[in-house]
Length: 178
Image (cartoon, one colour):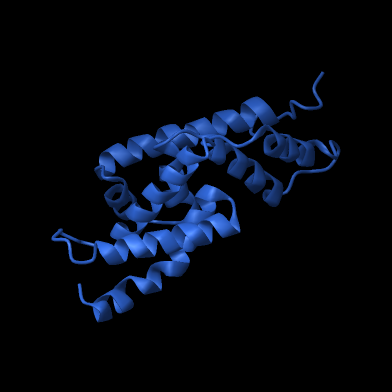
C-alpha cells in the first residue's frame, strides 16, 4: 500500500477507531494513545502481503487487539468496584423514580464492561458500534454462524444480569420488593 493509498483508505478510519477504543478503555487519553499506536502499527504493516477484503475490518481487528492488550496490561478486564458501586448508586438514588433509557443504557455499559472476551468484543462491535454481522465476524476471525451464537449468548448474559442485579424485565422492581 502506497502512502497515498494509506492516507485515503486508513486515515479516514481514525474517528471510528477512536470510538471503538473508547468503548473498550472508557478513557479518552488511553483511547487516543491506542489509536495512535494502532495507526503506527497499521503503517508498519501496510506492505505485508495479505488478502484484505476490507480495510475497515483490518483496522478494527488491530484496534480491538490493541485495546485488549492494554486492558490485560493493566489487569482490568473487569470494571473496578468503585465504578460498579457508582453505577448502582446512581440507579437506586431515587427508588420511586421511573427509570429512563439513559439509566438503562448506563447499566448495560457497566454490564458489558464486566463481560469476558470474546462476548464483550462481539457486543461492542455489533450492538454498540453497529457493525454488520459480516464485518464483526471478519474482524474477530470467526464465521457469521459462530458470531450469531456468541451474540445470542452474550445478549442473554446482559439480560440475565439486568434481571439479577437490577430487576429489569421482571415486571416488578427487585430493589423495592421485600
